[in-house]
Image 1 (cartoon, rainbow, N blue to C red):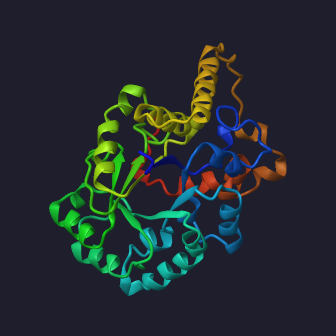
Image 2: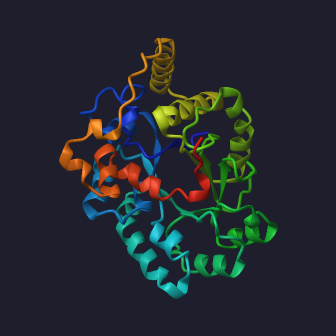
Length: 319
């Protein structure tokens, strides 16, 4: 099973310091790549990477480490892959930036994540598939059940584009192999958001035969855990590697350390509730005069703000 590559979606999370990363100061990517064979780059969804960033991805990982990366939301969510809006130029620009990874054999796949509200449209799908550069491998992740039909799978197969097999609340966990690679994503099963979820081992076990089935039909299998809150993605990825019988001794040590960390955290007594204060109590007077968006920046980093912007109103509830 040396053609199975499993990792996480992203690696630069502050709340991974403790359960996974040993300190805030160390290079997260350098350490991550010592433990895992692959990572899915999530930041490319929000903006095109700079050339320097791409070369950094090359520099800080070992030669056999590979990446997958999400297409920019400009292409998938804003222009909705409409060739009439010039997405071919946008796509070629992105692929050219990612080419150094491709040339070094370190680019596994580019992920085309459809927006949630986009329903089945075979002409739109085929129009976009037809402009994909042939030297890259691609996978498509649908976010609406209307796409789950034979016509879709046949179209993907004709272009050798992988159907993304998902674990999430909206779509069934079906295996459809439509290319010479298979692509898995585990999003979590939380209510809001999905990603704040720690899979139980019994929930991961049914995925073992699915991964093995895909492995038998493809040249390589790539899979990424996106339930990144608190380091859950790292733990669950290592657990499934162990179930597959491909975990290394170093990975097992990290898995045990993470599990012990979570046990220790659970054993701690709950903190004494603090006296409630208004937001004004936490902010200098000049900060209180800022607009809403600037106030958010006072409390969270840009990455979390970008994620919050991507959440639709109908996906949020206040209890």
